[in-house]
Structures are given as C-alpha cells and as structure tokens.
Image (tube, rainbow, N blue to C red; front, side, top):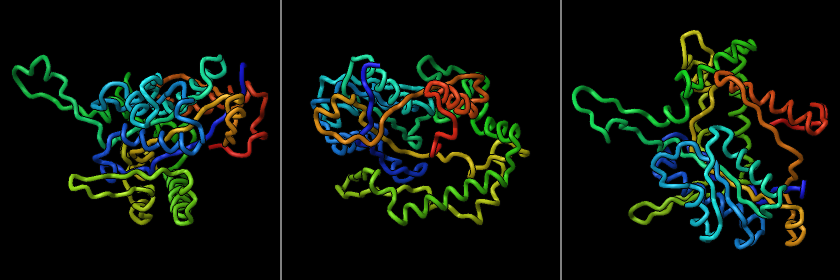
Length: 315
C-alpha cells in the first residue's frame, strides 16, 4: 500500500421524497451541490483534484457521463477526468473504493467520490419507437423499475427479495414495522435537534419566475404517520411482510466526499474526518442480494484481522 487514505469534507443534499421537492431537479444538479460543498468543507483547492468518480443508476435522460457534467458544473475545470459508475445500490461506495485504490497505487492524490440519484425523474421508455410499432398496442416501460428495482434475470421486484430474506430469518411483519417506526422517530428527533444540519448542503431551486426555494431538510420523516403505517398492506404478495412503509423509501438526493492521500492531507494542512482501513465486497445469487453485506463484512474482518467485538458501530 503506497499511502494511507483519508476522507474529508463529507456533504449531502437533503433527501427529497418521491415526486416532491426535487421533482424538477436533475440528479446532476443535486450532484453539483454536493460536490461544491465537499470541496469547500474539506479545504482542498479546486486545482488539487486529480479525478472524479460518481455512482449513478438511473442515467436515462441525464445526458452523457453525469460525473463529467458534475465535475465541470462544480468548478473543477475541464482537465479533470470523471467517471460515472453503475453498481446499483453500491455505486457510491464503489466510487470511494476506486478512489482509494487509485491513491494507493500512486495514480492520484485527491479524488472526489460520490453518488447521485433522482428516482422521481426516471423516464418512461418507448422501446419500439425507433424501429416502429407497426400494428397493435405498444408498451411503455418505467425505467425506475426496468433499470433499478426489478431483477435483470428473473424480473422479480427488490421487495420480493426482501420478503424472501424475512422468511428465511424469521423476521415478522411486526419486527420490521417496529424497526422502521423506531428509525422514523429517531430521524424526526435528529431533525428537530438539528443533528443533520452539519452534513446537509442546502439545494436552491429557482422557478421560472426567478423565485428561490431553499431545500435544507429531509422530507420523508415528516410524512411518517404511525397510525396509517401499521395498517399498510403487504406490497409484494398477500402473504408477504414487506410494506411500502417498512421497505426502503424512494428518494432523490446526492452525496460527495474527498478521498485523499496522507501525504496530501499533511502537505496542505487538512484535518481528515476518517481513515480508510480496508474495504471488501461480495457477490452471490442475485435473488439473495440482501444477504451480501454479511459476507462482505466477514471478508473485511478477515482482511483487518478483526472480530465483531472490535467494532463500536455498524451502519
């Protein structure tokens, strides 16, 4: 390993609810807000950035290479290479990993890494429009499902995989509801006490009349209604346990962080937020993607010669 790798300047936009605050904002625009904030907070100079890696899944209609658009839009200049990565849910984390690897092998000293997504703006697809529909009814496909939420191999929904995992480990509907309700209440409390303010980069929205709206708070927690929550029906099968409430919500947002070498951090006097000790990944049958983190963590423990008892917090 050529260099220790540090993280600095972490920033994220607020998370917008589906088809709500960021319904008319592109993922690229959200990414620019996050990257600008990360660079400013880290204390790194714009001219010191060697490369940019941005994770993104729903790229339909975003124009070519979202990472490049964000890099230039955030003021990093025309000479900084930028790459957009698609590894589904792990895309943003993979961006950080590749950034760290590029530093460890001596290619870079400073990398901007992050992730962007606007699920609200995922376009609908007319797959036969180019070659002609000829006779008969055509179909319109939702790219949110086609390119993100449905399995590429058997077409099953992510939520169905969640139901299977819950059945395998004996997680009841009540277990999942209790966990989700606690999560929502903790988020509401954290927002009320201002705990997220330091990490959020507010995003400005300017309408056609020039009016400015500043979005600086996560939307979804405010929508939580416990009375309605516990009455929701299973979303992916009548005997399932995953609902629209206890499942992952559909959101819009972006995040970014500066990945840099120990030498660079010392040379320019940057105080890092964290040090990367290691990373690992795991792949197996697509239908059991929900269990992959278990094996990835085991691999990481082996690489670091750690046990779970050595860890203070799992996130």
